[in-house]
Image 1 (cartoon, rainbow, N blue to C red):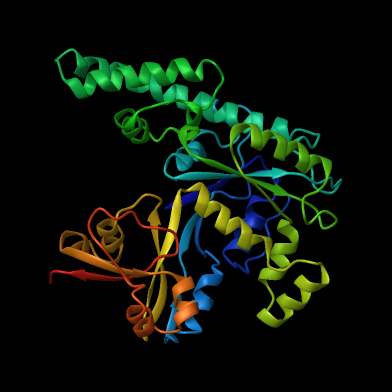
Image 2: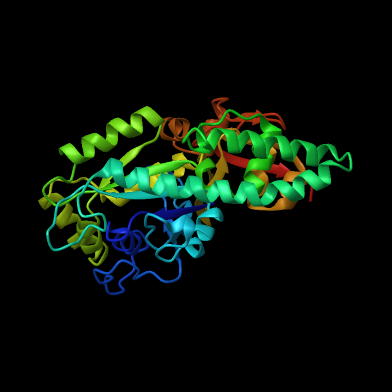
Length: 363
């Protein structure tokens, strides 16, 4: 799963991306289009449950869940019509599964705001409008081909025409497609177009070092807006996080303590991104490794096994599952089994976040 980091120029996107991916490259200069190609990186999803498991099952290595992040160049008003670097970068957003929109929530006369004034809601409106206009173009361009195919009597093509028209009418109300009610078949077609406003969004409030918890008025505006649209907001000081990313663990812990934080804000952001993508983790635990595996919320046990290897889904027989609470109470898998707490689940079992599993499969 991929998340694209977007925003207006000079809101701290690349600084945030470098910190998230622990990049030690020099920070980008204060110019609107310093990101020319989308940078890609992998970020671990911090999960304290991994450490808790290893207290009872010491492994040779620990492997956390991971997310792929894409740093996309700043979008400006008129991007859908080719302004700035235009559609070149809008196309990159079509390829990701969720959008992390970095919103500037700090004042700094040395960092020029592309629109002149710092206003989180205006920034969001600018980005959203450009994405909606680009989606309208995509739909308009797709309609003639779909209509030609529909005239042959193709039922799938007819449905595509209906979906295109439904999406176009919705966008005409200035509402993003993530608010559109659609059934499973319609949703599948919408995804095939890579429509950007249909993707879930997470707002990242880039704050200054005097407002690390995001309690200032600019963040409050953003939080009120996000609550109305059913999105999350994570306050992050990209400048501080970039400095933390450069430190070794001991110095990082000392710096966090000095500013009153228990963990880097990037840890909160990674977990929020995971939720926004509709993902959850299950664990496998043994002497070789303790590992978090990423699955969609609602995945079945065979689908979860298939994440390890596609053959495991085909040959799935059953899953043996226990919880972290079971492990902390009984200390070993042997004692969990003896206490009757090791559950045997079949093909219809819906995986729960944090399940610890063994899969039995046909070889």
